[in-house]
Structure formats: structure tokens, C-alpha cells
Length: 186
Image (cartoon, rainbow, N blue to C red; front, side, top):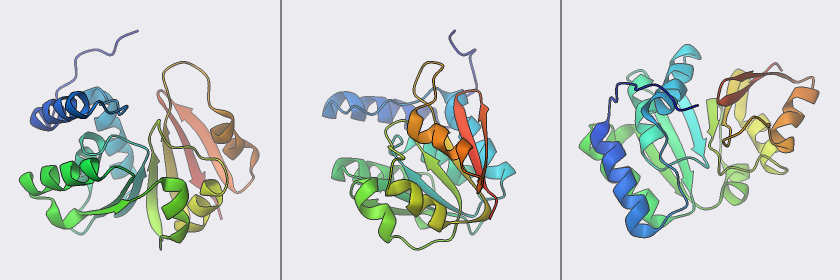
């Protein structure tokens, strides 16, 4: 079922992201406005100030998150593509969020285990694999009470690596529409 029309806070970013994906023949899917805004709402509800984003689109969802953060909030964006890094930095600069973004180039599985937290929120897009060692790194990097939001691929199934959070007593796990959400309990 298609999503109903949703007001777009950043139509210029979405248009630029769609152009970028077409020009570079990226596999990155730019989400509908309601989906990107939903992640921003979750960021705001969690009172996040330090957010890790990986496996997502490089600018559209992160710019929504940045707008939802407080004045001192910041985002660490992990992306293996240098074109995506440049694109994200340009978008954040154009919208006055330069100081909120730090881009870490590399595959999430290679760089996330070496990051320093604590993070209040980790957003894993549909391109992120949460198998080991990434799952252990996310646990280490999140503060107690911090949340993991996984943007699920289209369809009704939850990937096995994500479902494993529900079997781990250190996490409270649930599904919210297009998202699986896990809160670190301890």
C-alpha cells in the first residue's frame, strides 16, 4: 500500500538525492518524506543528541534527523562512498547544519567497531547488515536507554540478524510500521 502524501520539509534535498542516485547509479533508495520524518520523530522522542547513521541514504534521512536534534546535537554518518560523503557535507552546509555532521568513510562493518560513543541513537538503514561484529559494536556504543532504529526493507519480514535483538534480554525489541526498534536495557 503506498504511503499517503506527506509534507516534505526538505524537497530540495530529496530532489538532489534522487538526481545523485540516478547520475551515479547508486543502489541507495531515497525514502518517501513520511519515512524520513518518522526517523526524525523517533530521534526527537528519544531526546538524542549524538546519533550514528549507517546503511542509510547519505543526506535525506540524516538532514531530517539533524533538524530534530537540539542545538548541540550531532550525527556521525558512516558511508563507504566518497561521493555520498561529499554530497552529505554539501547538503548539511547548505542548510546550516555543517557543525552537526561528521562523515566517516568506510563500510559500517569495518569502521563502526572503532568508533567511540556513547550514542543516544543508532539508525541503521536498509543497507546495513547487523550481523556480528556490527551487533556487538552497536551494543558497546549505545548508552543504556539508547535506541537502535532499523529501517526495514520492503515487505513484512524482519531480517534474522535484526530479529536476534528480540531474543537478547539486554534489549527491548518491537516493530513500529516500517521500523524495528530496540532499546538497550543495560
